[in-house]
Image 1 (cartoon, one colour):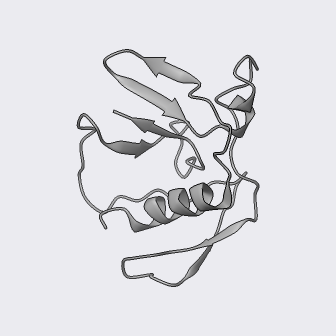
Image 2: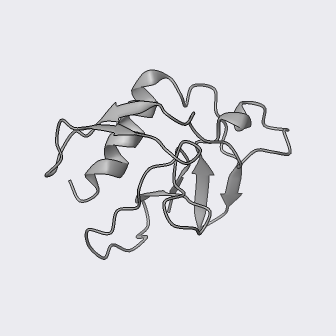
Length: 112
């Protein structure tokens, strides 16, 4: 409920089978494990970590003030950043990965 756009994107991708067969492509022991890159279906592909959903695909927002609204993945399959409140990367939380640029999260997430 704190990040409805990000959560809705993740749920849509999971339900659609987007993550099926995807391997964790980045694991740093005692820190984080990252997944969600469709290229990582091949765990030996050197481009693992660079993939995202297709641009123009859509999903419905499941909660929050925009509940029910259809969202389009833009700019290479990305969604807008959510800055609804300050949340930390506490152990056990799920966070959206991005390139460090604004609005660059698409399908990759990491577990703290």
